[in-house]
Figure 1: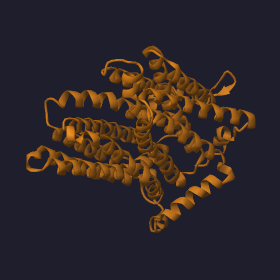
Figure 2: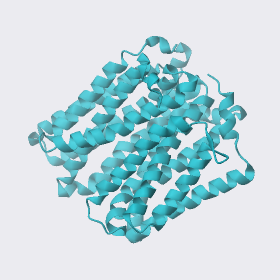
Figure 3: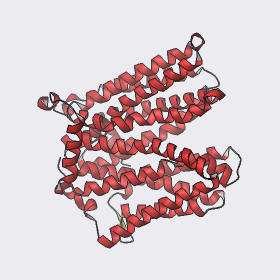
Length: 421
């Protein structure tokens, strides 16, 4: 990644705010899972909590992206974090004084406030992606997204380590309170971003926002021959997320039921996957727009991921599974950055919010679908049969590669040459 980009004041303020809020979100996650697990009667509510965390972003991403295009993305980012901070502080206060409330009320508050924060973040993420485009030059877009993804990936081990340490020292409420303060600190940092980055279109601000307008805007972009390559990127984004999203839910069964390892190996496998995700972020901008072995880098990445899924399906020991997880993590993070960059190179600034909101919605809807799919699969088949998911994923990616090769569909790769700002 290009270190010079972090020296740009506006981008640094945005990146710094994202990093702080990401770390706080990890504290929220650790506190929530630990509290639910510490009450056996609520263990079954863990999938409900995870769905509550992701579903609002999936459902509201379209609406949030359109709102970003009709207002100041800077203000959306600031108020999204500020409101999230107030909600998290409220949750912290409820848990600090938990003796005053029945446990079922605390559970309800946890779910509802998590949903509320998710709604705010459904506006925040497409606004952040739009601000990245406004704060860096066109040839720095890949580096900009890599640095943003870096803040996301590095926040997980930091947040997990800090949360795991303090969960035994302080109360659950203190971690929620820390999350709230992190959001408020992020809002303060983002408020220092220059207002001159964007000129708000007052006519657009006064338009009535409706779902019909949202879908109409997306349809115009997808059906515009000038942006024909976007359809292929959208397909790849959906495939990437639908195949990667179930892996965390499968990890306990992969470690214990399939490999026959001790339960602590769940953590080790997560670490290997996380290491791959982190390395993918580091190399993404270095290999962007490169060709290897006669293939464009995205096609080569898809082929490697296909091979990684086959390895996860057939491996019988932790070395093979670990290597497969590392490759999946590496390729998924690197490819995600490449596809996001290509999208932003193709689409005009005034359509960035609605398209990125659509992409964010597609990405996040995969998580509840994956959790639901794993729950159904566990009812129908033995845990050992869950590896068929990896074979299915490999076959789908293989079919995509074959169709693309036979039809010679490369317009989505070259489409960025016609990008408009």
